[in-house]
Length: 381
Image (cartoon, rainbow, N blue to C red; front, side, top):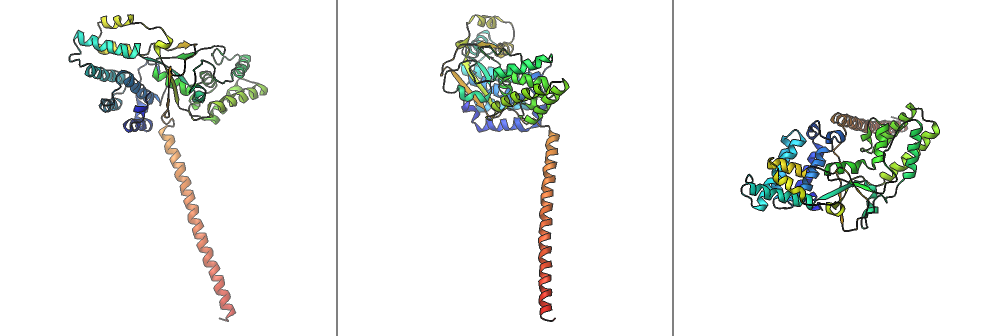
């Protein structure tokens, strides 16, 4: 679905920039933005993925793409707030749509309405919902019908964990384990987050017990395990309950991380799983707001959770897997400390190498001196 863009060298180059340059960690989100609450370092990357997705759905022109990408990179570089940056992206998309439709005056009522209709048709009527899932389930999805909530799971054991925590008056994992549906959203950024944090109930459990639940995203088993143990000790869990929880926890962890984690997304057409009509279009056409504000409202997420119970036939959905799902989570000073440790190790290794060299040379001359002395004695010198 997005391969033709993600395989481009200019795209890969910018992804590397987003991953490695700390300036993108310092971008701001407005106080009312939900993204600031859920995500930190990976937000820039997910927003870029979202931009590529919108370009694919709305424009999908490889010849117009290089200039579009160059303008997006400038927006990332110059604008401090992600929300404002997305407005800049919407302006770019409006101009491209105007180019495609050959609209000469986007401020005229006719031109404005033509552009709005185009966005509505492409992004709403022909748009997608997306389900972010754990990569470990990918092999059970690809090449067959998608059957909601038929993944291999440890639900019965996780219910046991919930029961144990309830004994100590602690509520964990709000998931309804009897539910026979999965949730889709039209928020691409949140779908990326849901994927790497999934299964959501497991992330909820870790979030309850750990001060740094993002250790889960870092795949730091030792850190999460230590936090879990500390939490249970602080709440006076019996040793038997602790052993049971940790045993089930390890089973779940090993299952989730049995394959390398990626952003794993399943796309389905909105019209396949929900009712759509063009009635809403009139509201956009009759709005007295600016074209930019209309397009922003049209493209902004509207469905945080759409429960899908029916099976989706193979061929009616598309899967997208993104290898890069977060930038480096380790702060810059930790990198420096790590480099110091590596440098020290190398110095130590080098030192031992130098010492070993001198020991060998010294031993050689000592041995040579002994041999010469013996020869001299034998010759009576």
